[in-house]
Image: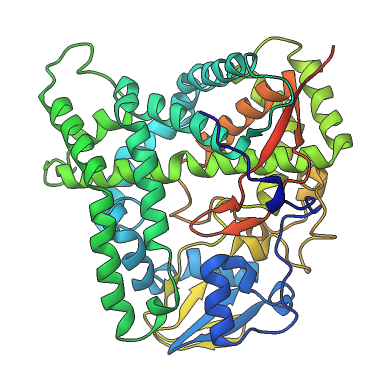
Length: 470
């Protein structure tokens, strides 16, 4: 079902950039809290985009935004043991993700990562490729039945597509049973747990967080019931064709700790499933959403993309072997994620001991914030950073750039496990759609990047479909 387009009375002409304009000076505490509640990245003043490290003071918290690649490497790799994820992140994400891969530490994290890795390796990606392409082709078939020039909400459409893909690849046919439940649960959870001013007030933040956690768990009851039913059914499967499925759910249910030979608990399996559903489809959908937005405003770049697809694919659907030849397709996605990174901010890290970053003393208990949104638009690392230019990711331009200027999937031991999966999926979808359609922004529709848990278009993204002539 298509999301209705907002009343024309609420619209204004789309700007060439959906990015919020940074305030010229630091905001007052009240203004900052009010701004980040509505849009997290809108609170960064202009100076943050030019300095290596900037300190923000938030009601008893000392927060350091680290933009220097050496500083980022220090926090995420060289001295990672001093910077575990903060209590704030655990309060916000814990009720949903529990002890899943995103929040777990130490031996539990290593065990879970080891179990899940084979579902995202190159062999798995090759096996998953037909599922990704077939899902895109089914969506395109549905588009053929749409009335011409009727605006389509592309963000919601991409979410539906990537949710279908993650359900089939990670949970086989069982994914269909809980995909819509997972989607609604994730949406409600994010709306409930988004931090506000009260979360930062010492003494009050913890109590307020407990109150929100109660509401969040109520929202997740339906998802929990559905996934626990699936877990029980998988555990009871005999050694049949269904029982030997090598999807993620089966691996989680059958996993044993190498040292103790104990299985993962049903709660641990549930936490990993929610983490995959929450992170595994939304980020790719948003990367594609912002790519369509940018291509619609840059017909010369879209033409270059079309030329590559016509030369390498013609009219046939893409396959896994095509990926290495679709270099410009990859560059378009990489540049879209530079300008509009779906994960706009990495999890806050809390200093266990005093340290030094970029020549600045870091007191014990300080919060370290690494923000891809800022890094990707930093004046020191990117020439004309607001401009959409996929050629930035051509080999000759990438060669001299520090790897840590660009963090769409994080960095270090805890880099996103699904990075290759997400890039493969995005390339297949972008190529499949661009073979057959050009997408154009609906007239007068406002486009505003809003950073809450992820970076979404605040009003959705309404676009019209234009079949390509050959």
